[in-house]
Image (cartoon, rainbow, N blue to C red; front, side, top):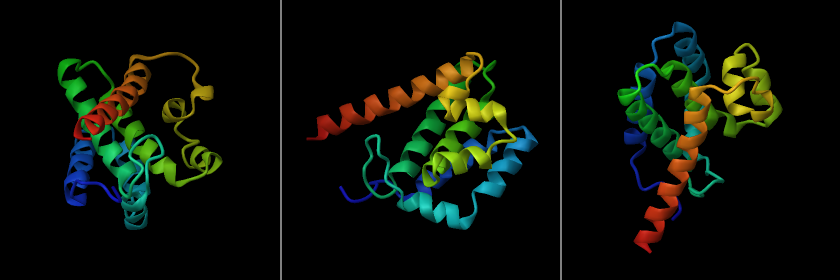
Length: 150
């Protein structure tokens, strides 16, 4: 497969829906400033090294993780969904940068850095637990459904 089987508009709709569920203004503004048209175009082309090794793989993974997080939030509304969704979206964006550049881009958001850089974690939280396990779950589902199609 050379590119994602999903329409880019569909994937962006999922991500836009996730962003619309973020209530904290500082996270909405951060995403608005980072998700420029240039970054969006790069995300549409970026391959995901963790499984979706085709054009649009990172965008597809980000949309999938965002949707899974919202489903999780429906059942556990005490989760800081703003932090979780922002971190998920930025994890996709950060795949466009060198680690150091991504770190510098987010240095004013230490709560987000803990999600993206495991060595920076100071204390465990339910949101970090969910983040790590949603990534594992998404990867496993992707691998199994891909095997089923073969």
